[in-house]
Structure formats: structure tokens, C-alpha cells
Image 1 (spheres, rainbow, N blue to C red):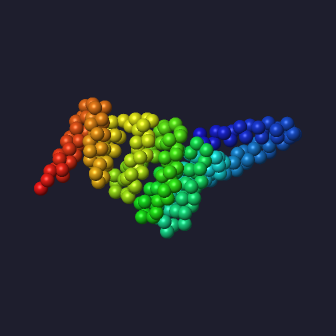
Image 2 (image 1 turned 90 degrees about the horizontal axis):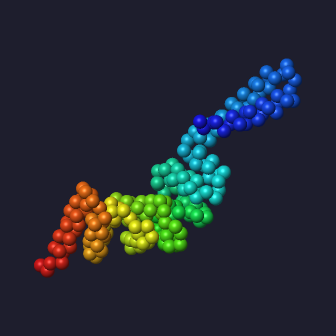
Image 3 (image 1 turned 30 degrees about the horizontal axis):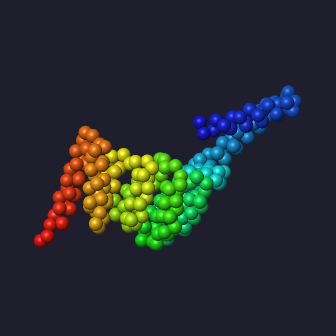
Length: 239
């Protein structure tokens, strides 16, 4: 199905050549058209032969597409195996930097830049967080925005040194415009409970998540909330 669009080229070429060719040469015309189709198919196959080549083609053909840019950045980062020593790492960073400035770009490029650097112990540019704040505050919050912030939360929960204050600010900015579902709120509360001095805030989020959940999820959230409440009470009790 990747080559169906080329049939239009085949039909058009045959129609033109058939008109100008003599009757006895029409077999040759057919062979020429078939050869053209084979050539075009080979070109398409080369472009679609790998995720990287497809991403390069899409970004080249659609330079203002934020999605194409982000896809290319991801492929370059994977090619670098997220290693700053790889020359592909710098190319990935450059593509994400380009992509974040494109019209209607989501915070996904900034998310990638933050994670790539934080995971490798490299400095995280505060401007990336500022860009996230600006986008979340001035644009419609949708799927890509929630994916960007939940992705940062996931990496923080995995132990990557994501700035907790900036992450909490971004999470709450999304929540103010598109409230998180109960399971995501509980994940945030669980992470928040592990931040210094934030257990009380975590309990507030756990309580809200429990009220919004039902069934087994609600029981899980209530159990987690009870553990945090007990730990908070124990730490508040004087020796």
C-alpha cells in the first residue's frame, strides 16, 4: 500500500507516451513505463527502508511540521543511544531545539531536551522549562501536552534528576486547564510524597484522586494515602 500513489504517475506517463508513440512502439512504451515505476518504487523503498530515513524525509519535506521534527529528534537520539559522546547526540539536541520553536509545537521537544540532559548529568537549560511554562499557559492543553508532562513525571519517578519544583509547576499548570485523571493524580501524589516537605500536599492530591476513582483503583489509592499519612505522622511525632 506504500506504493499505491505511484500508480497515478504510471497511468499519467502511459497516457502521454501512448499518444505520441506509433502503434508498433506501444510495447516499448509499456516497458518504459514499467521501468519508470520500478525506479520510483526503488526510490520510495530507500526512503521507507528505516525509521531514520523516513523521519529524515518527512522532516525535509515538511520543515514546519513539529511532529516530523520531533520524530526525527527521537530517531537521532536513539541512534546515539542517548550517549553525549556520540555525534548523533548533538544532532538530536539541535533538532529538538529547532523543533521547539516551530509554530504550534508542543512541549515534547523541551521534554526530550530536559530528559536527555538530566539523564546524563548534563546542565538543563532553564529556558527549556520557561518554554514549557509559556506553552502551557498560552495554548490549548491537549494530548501532547499531557504526554510531555506525564513523561517528565515518569522519568522523575524512575530516578532521573528532574527539577522537582519546575516539574510540579508544570504538572499543576496542566491540571488547572485539563484536570488529570485519578490514576495520573495518584502517580503524581506518590512522587510528591517523596519530595522534602511535600507530604501534606501529596495527601491532598491522594484524597482528591481517591474521590474521583472507583473500584480497585480507589482502594489502591486509599492504601497508598494511608501509608503516606502514617509516615507523615511518624515524622511529625517528637522523639
